[in-house]
Length: 405
Image (spheres, rainbow, N blue to C red):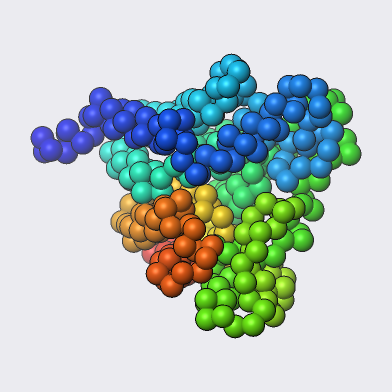
């Protein structure tokens, strides 16, 4: 009992959070780890361009991200000249602290408090294993919003809708979580109304600032992409390149700014990936709707649908960037809190995937680019693990039917 009390002690947990946050921040600000390249070069460039009056991406020109992403892009400038990476780290740490605090204190005096503290420890372990990439992308801004959004969805649907809408206007993928909430909860009208109002406010601000012509430009920015090397569907083509099959190779796309694989069939697979993603996404939603209509509890359906949709977005995505692993945090935390034991297997698999992803990026990334057998084997193992997680997620979703109907 004393051991359990120690691990659930707020001071101990905040100390662990502070140590981990310092290490992740140190990697970016002092050690200048590779994952922080987007922060130091791309994000800082966009922010400096806006501050210098040279144009604001997403408003004055087309952009790959939704309009609200400008907020976290610009805020680190407040840290002062030359301190943009430090400002970014502070911003991400503050948001993570808010979500971490919610896990620790929002359910005090209830049995759920213990579950949320267990989930908080899992999150720290996941951040540690995933490494600096977990705090070095725009996805890092979205994650804490998504965590609180999912945890509040059943009891406070309006708050959940607002948080997830803001998250979606920063990075598109939380739209999957909005879909999961609308499918699972009883007060879906409140969720939808909250999403619409929040979105309308964001769009109105963008329009006032002169972004009428570019507010939806992000929707068309990804359509021309090929297969990024980390994507599961790209794995067979990487092995063909490794075996020196004619026409197969890794190349750098100077427009998208990412490494992709070329060769016969890659274009077809890239196109088919979108179809498979849509089919699996709609199939999951349809199953969730059926569960809800059959009377399954929202606390059972929500995390299962959210996780399955998230893994579908990862497995069938033609991009597959390493930061995508961070998407798993919100649905798994929700599952550990609402579903407990049913999410132990997904939580463990996610930890393994996080560790493999950090090993690949940044440490073994050059080997992947050069299609070395050892590094490619690790990438293949990670991608197989994603398929396993998809199967386990689908099983958890099916279990919601078995226990409720």
